[in-house]
Image (cartoon, rainbow, N blue to C red; front, side, top):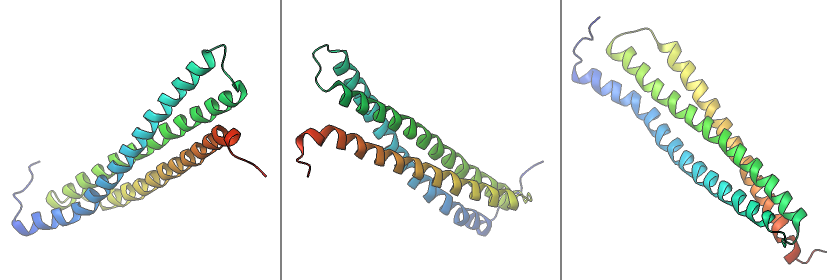
Length: 153
């Protein structure tokens, strides 16, 4: 099957429909960049805590163990976050591809576009939820680290 030559009005319509998913791709890309940076910092912190625990003269071993557990949980939540954001990016690209098929080739894929959009939003929401869990765990680890230095009532 050959794709017919599109006129300028059809191409303009395709580009108009493709803008929203492209903006979504850009926004999710920034979230993905932030999540991968946070994952790198969590991995580095886990390694640093591991080295501190390997030191026989380490003070506050219980505190270090607790921080290590929390930081490892953060890394796993960030892994889930990155996976969800990656799925969202894939689904956004799939939407653009399906829109091209619908408008340029006339394929009846409208329901697939709607399904891809719905799954895209769900994946984005799941990624944001994992990201927020990481933020919460990060503050928990900070509370543990700073507790000895703060005067508690």
